[in-house]
Length: 337
Ligand code: ACO
Image (cartoon, rainbow, N blue to C red; front, side, top):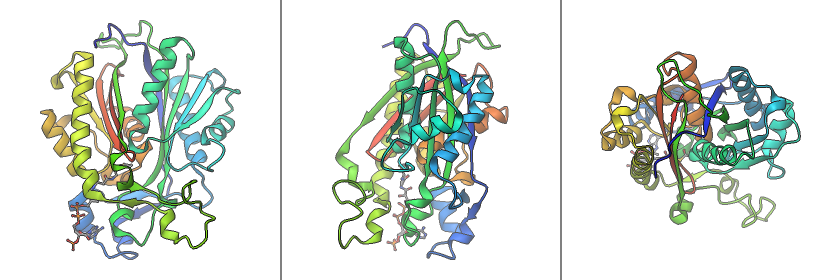
């Protein structure tokens, strides 16, 4: 389904990474692993870890303030806040309301989205619909995770993969905006999907209503991330490829029309395999997994903002984002910056 013109566009981006860095060598003092194994199997060298005083909404608000500044938009102009996270400040209420308070936004609708690694693509898709319907004009979408708090630091199969951080995007109507290179700016296509078949291949068994944290005899590890890595690996390659193909079809573009691929940073081998299947040029692939690890919902917006601020991704460039996370939830989006 081709869309004649984009309805929304990215007005600005921002990100925040906590100062503290944990290297693979430091990790190998807690669990039986090595820098060589982690780099070879995942591409990760280090990850950022938030200090105990920092909460998810603190990181989200920092990223949001940077995105607002880049967009030249005041917090009071934001009329919808979407916070993609699987590591909320509290089970109740939504982290988005704390973000609203911390950035000084008005009493606008503010809600959380739990789509893990696919969070930003879900957020963009929903924001685009609100802008298309006229219900919102300035939407803040944040992807944020404080995964270090939900990891079992004794489990080498998960704790080496993840990191903390936040990324934010401000969206507004595309109107007639044109980049310096003459391209129409905006979101050209999105695609999102979920399938519970592998829900228990990446999950936290306890802490929800099925197995409350207050239940007797809970093993502490039950309240931490459990993952069947190989199940996720296979489906990640397949679904990153299929959703990328879908948005290329929807937008009427081919791999050669894409300037940059901004994939979810879960594993360098997953990214390489999906890009190979797509037949896209490897030089176009943006990567920061070596420095940041897998930050789930925050992965794509951190990478996008870093790439824009470094001058790599320029106004008028067309970017393909593709992501997959727990759920399993996945999706893709194409946007001209
Ligand atoms: N250090 C050293 N050895 C390890 C480590 C480690 N950190 N972790 C596992 N191993 C060992 C295993 O125990 C196993 O040993 P064995 O052969 O003696 O049994 C061996 O390494 C191989 O294990 P595999 O699981 O086969 O390793 P694989 O190559 O599949 O890599 C990995 C594991 C990195 C987890 C991979 O499967 C993966 O990346 N899967 C996708 C996970 C993912 O991306 N999840 C998040 C996506 S969703 C989201 O972002 C929210």
